[in-house]
Amino acid sequence: MSKIMCLFGLSVAVLLLLVFALDLAIKIPFSRASMLMDIGVIIGALGLALISFTTLREQS
Image 1 (cartoon, rainbow, N blue to C red):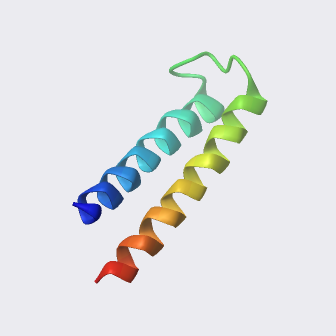
Image 2 (image 1 turned 45 degrees about the vertical axis):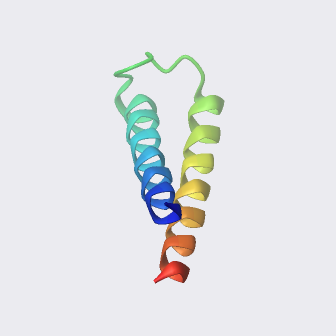
Image 3 (image 1 turned 60 degrees about the vertical axis):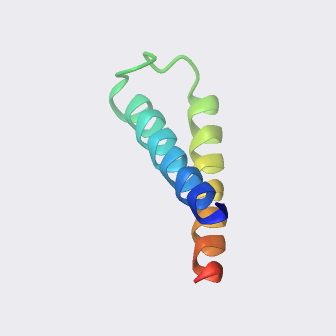
């Protein structure tokens, strides 16, 4: 069960990173409403991806 949660966290992090990086780069989903919010969510998504990946690697 915890391996599934790690994979889910990793996939959510990649999805968030993709959506907010696209918003920051080409203004697609949200018309770049707040650049600070985009950068904050990207940093948070990178942190979630790092934590999910290291936890998944420890479980193997």
